[in-house]
Length: 283
View 1 (tube, rainbow, N blue to C red):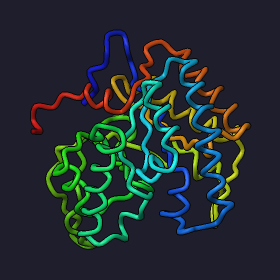
View 2 (view 1 turned 90 degrees about the vertical axis):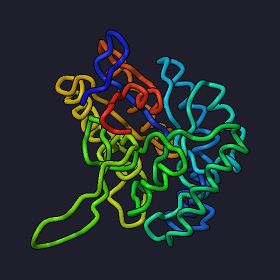
View 3 (view 1 turned 45 degrees about the vertical axis):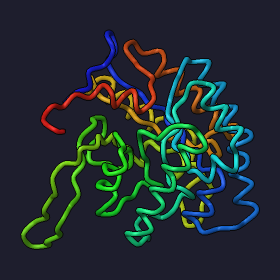
View 4 (view 1 turned 180 degrees about the vertical axis):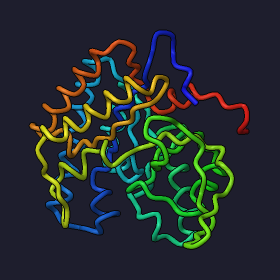
């Protein structure tokens, strides 16, 4: 089902920033390395201003998925993001590995991040993006319970929002079984549209790839979405500590020049995009 976009608009585009800072190294990679932490500091002190200036040049408003650890560690940068008119969405407490949490701990951390958003930013987050884009069997139910409107962690579509379903039973011989669709709207992501895996220097990774290759990949995906998926959504994920490095940043500038030059492109935060979805069959 296509989105009901503003008049004259053909494709919704989210250039979403995952502002992980220190937390991705502490939470996902279990590292206390000063070298790793300094990369997170670069993202906050150099990456955030560079991205905000670039977004302002193109008149782009977007969503920054931000762990509450980042909000507390780099509060001034988060305030600046909000002052520029962007949205801050939930992205864990410390970029925790969701699938390794006990159910009670997953619930506790989700409740904690909602409370910390309210305390630190003055409002509840409308949307959630799981750290490392992975969820448990109970994550979607918890997000519904705590009042979220949308999730952006799964890959069951490419350029079409949808209501996600949990696989409730695995059966190698008779096929798998799905649970009912969630009330949440899923705005899909893709590892092909993420800067972190191909461009970062990571343990046991094929990172530090050519920016020409990555730029072509993103451009091809955007062209397909623009030409063949009217009423769809193109969601690119970037990380301030990655994309703001000089050669990566120049690649992003080229990409945005191309996207912004197409008629009917609507740059918007994820909550604004979610508000364009109308599905009376799901309540």
